[in-house]
Every structure is written in C-alpha cells, then in structure tokens.
Image 1: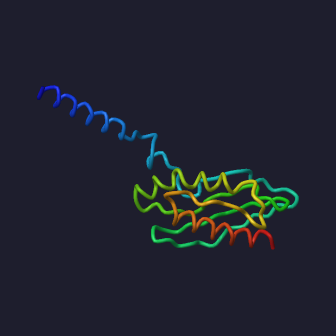
Image 2: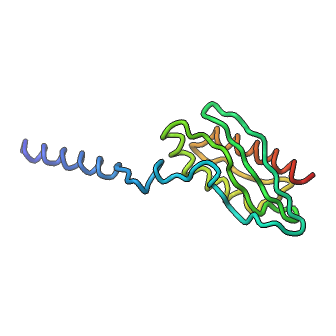
Image 3: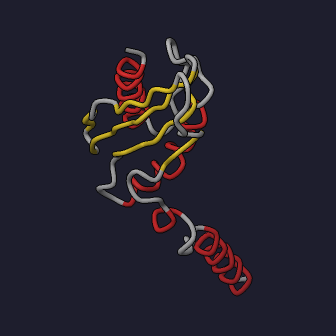
Length: 140
C-alpha cells in the first residue's frame, strides 16, 4: 500500500512539473520585442492619419501606442513601448497586448470601446490612455 501511495504521489508530481514546463517557443522567450506588437494595416492613403500617443507610466513600466485612422475608423495600431522589466511582465504582455490590439482595430476613432484585459489592469489602462492621446492627435 505504501509503494502505491509513493508511486501515485510521484506520478502526480511529475505530471504537474511536465505540464508547467515552458519551452523556448512559449512565454517570455517567444515574445516580440518592443514595437513588434502590431495589428491591422498601416498603409497610407486618402483620409489616413497616423499618430503616436503619449507615454503612460505604470508602476511596471511605460506604455505607448501608435494608431492609424482611416475615414474615422481605427485601421491599425502598434504598441511602441510596454513593460519588460521581468518575465512576469513579458508573460502578461504576450497575451494582453495582442488582445488589446485586436479589440482596437475596426473601432470608431472618435469613441473607441476597448475593454480591459483581465490580469493586465495596469497595462490595459495605460494602453487606453495612450491610445486616446494618439487618437486625439490623429483626428486633428
């Protein structure tokens, strides 16, 4: 009975370790470098305005967004700066920034409705603030 219990506990421990293992193509090592989070198209054309938002400081680092507006609609967005001070920052931003960008492209440039990303509150708030300042500049 004791051997079965030891075998069971060691098997469960091995499975937990195996499932939590991060390969080189996952997590922080697979992250793009600052400025490489891009969504949408950013080609120039009639009615196109591109602007860079203010740098918004968070307790984890700065966030800055660049946006392209075409005919009153957000046609593209790019994150120029985001927190990269720790592996946790990189892990959070590797999933949060693509979500924020996907929620941004196609939105009305006058009143975008970009929701927060759960688990990335500081980044989400700073993203929205920088996005708004970029949109204010692009719509001038």
